[in-house]
Length: 613
Image 1: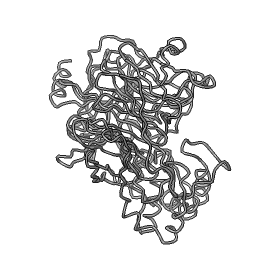
Image 2: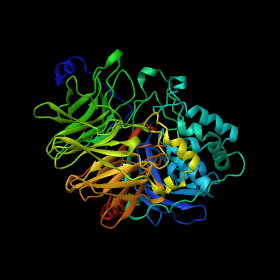
Image 3: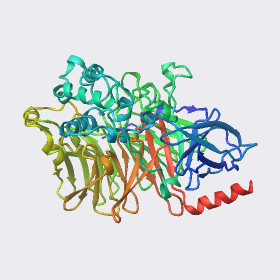
Image 4: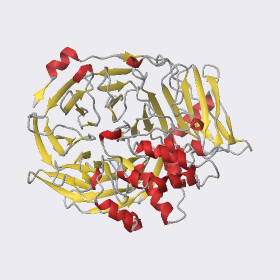
């Protein structure tokens, strides 16, 4: 173990980024009514406001009577808009120094498809026969390996066009880079290329659309009472991009899903500290940032950098906040280690595993256990770090290489008894570091039986020798355990099975495993468990976060204001006497969102204040 405290003190740097609105008196409550063009009140409609020149967007939803109430906003000029699926948005400006109310009228639109989030696009794909169902599974699992279905499916191509796209994508790795002859093409896409192109042309060809769109009811109740704050993260200033480079930030659904803006700093994991500010990790190579802090009051961003190789800053991926408010994250200044940040003092330290031990790595996730220790993914297992002694302990995956792929670690979690858990996503195995025995164990997940039964005999023969080139090229029946979370007050691990479209519930003492399916085969990504034992999961390829209540067995969906948000993590800040705040980093749209749960009493109080204005 090696501490880099002295190195960081000498060579780390920070930078403040402007663009936020100056802090002024915030005592205006913007309110109004949303109705359709036929005069009917519209509930569950999203209404957004962003100050001119500002970096913070606030979004609320209308109640069943079509009324909306913002929290107090600073006086000034704002861009405002209201939007709902199947309706054209209504947009305008308000000056809160002069206007306290703004009504909206929404007109139906025929161009619904481009507005859709990825989960609804995937649900709409045809499954008229067994062949359709086989191809739909490949689209869900293999054609969306870069995380969101809505980007590719918003376009139309004929069979030749889809063939060309598949030809390209089978030679692109999990990071979106073209690899060409440097590795074999993705075997599944190669094997099914002709029939997959025919299926996509049927669904999204230039002629009659073969999809079957079914919109969900708009939000009501608790899901319609939430308030969102979305904080913009800027593009990399070293790229020399023009000010108008971003043409679509996802806030206008009619523009569809934006492309990933690689010149931007990658926003991967994020947490809110006990002071109420946001912290995020950056996994895109750059010269300025390892982790960043966002002021939730002003939107200003402060950068913290750990020097890495070749003049770049060390990248990071996973982050957690321990019960004392300390932030822990993986960091790679040349060899993967663990970073520690105290938000109060801004003291940053880095600890490196000793030679001979695996570094932190894989698609790294970081968590804390009930004994105060920190766990992180390593490429072939997991590492446990003791903050008191500075010592690392290593656990290796029992099964690592198989005929069908290599078990590179993806997610990791730690339980209240001090054990660590990790996911070998490509081979459907959950590893466990048992601190009582000091040995590794493993839990094997069941295959998705419906998909296994659907595979043709010819395809099964192909799959016998198929080797996955990376962790995002799964077999059709794969569960795909991506990222996970433990209940810190119970003996339960929840695993987001991103291809199986379910949460695996594992008893951390007995390893007994059961499965909770998500509605409409929505695909979970990460899991965070709240103080009421309810798992929250961000939907892979869908612009939403969902919560499951094990007591009532009910799912609640909370849709996000940005199209193509692509959140890859979810974390919560729960404090006694304060509303729960859910943090969602948007990788594709370069924002960090905070969803605040608002009570009926809070909205009633806002309504009374609005009436007095």
